[in-house]
Length: 264
Image 1 (cartoon, rainbow, N blue to C red):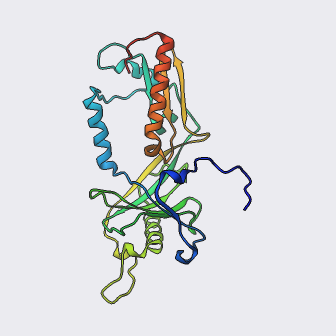
Image 2 (cartoon, rainbow, N blue to C red):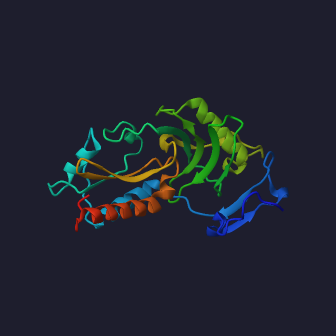
Image 3 (cartoon, rainbow, N blue to C red):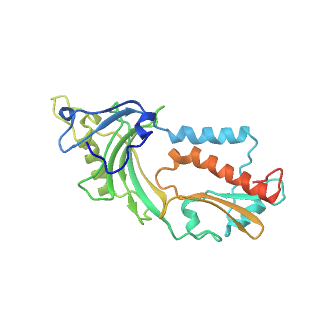
């Protein structure tokens, strides 16, 4: 066996439990290769409130406001004095926010269907016969979060409402990939998408950025700005690492400024 590059010392699959490559006889029609592993799926409806609770427990004060310029956020500190640092996590809004106006940002539209059906597994497949911007995945959320059927990855599409024809294609792809999602009827005949118990349809705009995530520090006027945005579709996966990196950047910036206690 020959490689064009040196083998990676710590390949990604070492972090997974029960990782294995499926033998060819277990592959479905049109599938060239497949892997199986044990991982996690976040129920964001539970996870996000938990994050808020952790912030509140650590004396974080939440405020809602509208700013035309990123530096204006420094005036919103709950103490009444100006903040030393503003951490910019505004996602797609950084495209139009004054002081940032990053034209490298673009939406990657994702459409999903949430159903009550539980196939017992989570699965996805690369590629789709419905176009390069349509994908197929089935993700089951814990604690009654339903099963997510996806999806799309449509760059520069700002449409916020679900498209009915796209929804049908999503459901058909998922049922074809995992027939157990709907099972068979009383006569033993395989059900189609009519066997799906739909909860809702959804659309999200991923904050994709050409050139990758923007994580850097700049000073506008006398306000230190730490940018942390442009994570596309991997925001949850990268959040802890990027948050740690942003916190380090804040500490370094304050160290140069000579500020002992930061106000963010």
